[in-house]
Image (cartoon, helix red, strand yellow):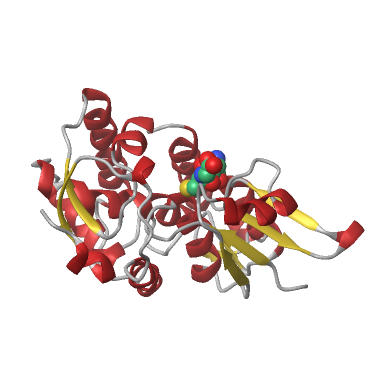
Amino acid sequence: MEKPLLIIGNRNYSSWSLRAWLLLKAFNVDFDEQLVELFHPSARPTLETHSPTGKVPILVYGEKDNKVTVWDTLAIAMHVNEYFTDIDIWTGTDKPNTETRNNNQSRINSAYCQSIVAEMHSGLTGIRNEMPMNIRATAKIQPSSACLADITRIEDIFDDCLKGRSADSFLFGDFTAADVFFAPVVLRLQTYADASNIALQPMTKQYCQTMLNHPHIQAWQQSALTETRIIEEDEAGEIMSIAGVLANNHSF
Ligand SMILES: N[C@@H](CCC(=O)N[C@@H](CS)C(=O)NCC(=O)O)C(=O)O
């Protein structure tokens, strides 16, 4: 199968790009990547060519009549699972065969994983709006009750998935699409939780650390820290510190 191209936005800010990129990396899909500057005229030709919504991420491969375009992160996850991976992204285990399809625990995990991925994709807008991903920063916000309710809901999900598992476990033991879709939440909590005095459960902190130790998440963060563009629409709260190449340019 032809190597797909993943078009992404600025690593510091683009949480949906991170999800698609991490999915492909974690499930060993060979792909090329192209970064476009979000909200910038330089991105227009690429977006006009490939993105029906004008947004990223977009996965494309093939030529002319055979060109395949997948926009929207959830669609990318489903498409990649259908055509590019040996492992089932919803369970982190081999693709279902007759035996695993009849395995009730596998079905329960798959249903739970798909449900929380969908919940992340369609909801949890309190945390998504008030804590935009901003990897290089720590920042203090005044979270609304909607944002705090989302954090409580997320902590309940983490607790439900992780209880009884080892300290360095992913949500379903093996790495799945659920970890991919909640990765930006981990990075958002890193930016805003301590600085805003938002107390997190020990299980949440433990899971965040596991995710922050993940080599592909570390690689994404390192690249984000080399970026210099500041997108005002994606900056929130009072900036307490800045890491990366902008660290020395920032005055508090
Ligand atoms: N529902 C879409 C959301 C995509 C999205 O909002 N992407 C942002 C970057 S994280 C974007 O392209 N923003 C630019 C714009 O809205 O013009 C998905 O799941 O991929």
